[in-house]
Amino acid sequence: MNDKGVTEEVAREYIRDLTDKTWKKLNAAMWADSPVSKEFIKLCVHGTRTSEATYQYGDGHGDPSNVSKSRVMSLLVDTVPV
Image 1 (cartoon, helix red, strand yellow):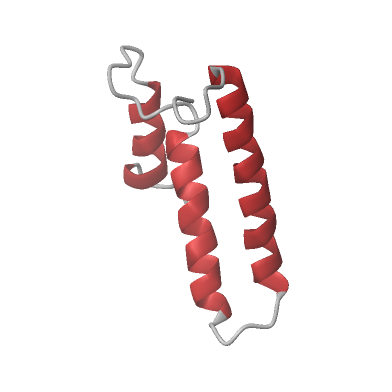
Image 2: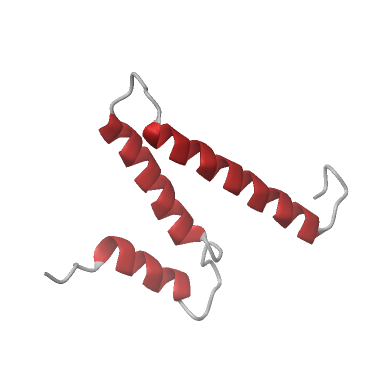
């Protein structure tokens, strides 16, 4: 925002656009021939999904509702019922 002198909404839209383009590249990498193993590519994509799910609504610092904390606990700590 400061470098380009744009509003917060314009900056957010730019970041959303970058995110969409990056997801398209990651999804294409899942199907492309590569010297890198498919398992490693899947690991990278899943790590990216985890990060997006964790930080999708902010980083949680100073959030009195603990929404981010409950998401992280649910995703990484709580056991999955069998």
